Image (cartoon, rainbow, N blue to C red; front, side, top):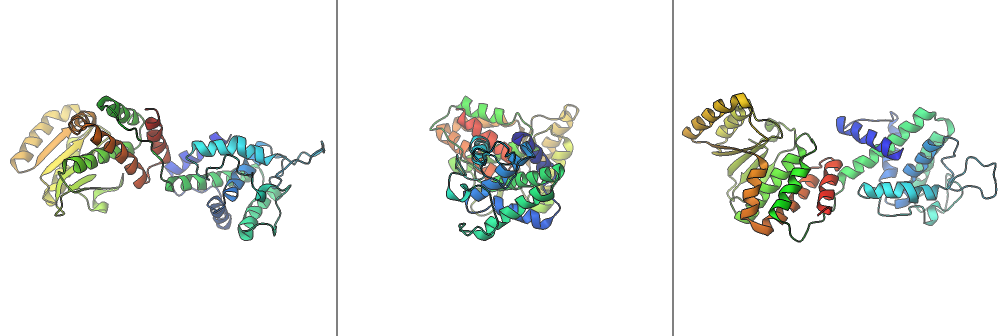
Length: 357
């Protein structure tokens, strides 16, 4: 159930970043504060208590323990075990969003029979009362739809917290040329709206600048942002020490069209950029002759335009630079995924690929 609700929330938030499951602004703020609390047990509280309630609506979501020796008690339950056996392993699979604890209720704050307001034993009484307020709303009058909405709002805040985290990418001490290319191809298998392609291309051009010294830095635009909004002529701009753009790179994860080429040529001409690269899976078949003719005319007017498929270009670069550039490439892919706040699912995929080496 937890995985199913999580996937629904991730899909919803990916399609609509400003999505809400709860309309009450005060309740949303309380959930956000709780999921991002400085104490680990507080961060885990809502996911554990509400998952228990959704699993069995008869349970009291403020209870933390089952009354021993009372067979008539149908509202009490072992919240600590649910936390350690279900929620903590899920949290670990999701890059430890809530912290690294494998037993989040092991400490004194949660080793009580039932949560109650104004518990003087709690160091952060305001934060504690916030948790109690949320759970009391669920327990006092919430129907099944309300309970699910609150639970999904909690998962939504967890997802947003996850997006802000930097992932740990385990780099190998060395990797072969074929190994590096295989990782890149595996990473591109799943569609990402261009995110994965741009991370790989950004990484390869970063590596070229570092190892071959052809330029000082690479500026990148956010995926799906218009060039007018970013002020860039292309997805990547390679800039020399004097601040001049010496190379523009457009990254396409779809078939290239003549319209794409015309637009980029015009933008680069306005910026006086002579060298332009396109990475693309291929060119629209019936436009190939026209594209070839356009490339020739661009060359005659002072612009060099190159069209290549990523893997064939990367093969030459990663072979020429040797083992060191291949490690830099792998490292830079992770940096692009983190720095540009790429969806966690794509970052997780890259991490898992590295772990598989």
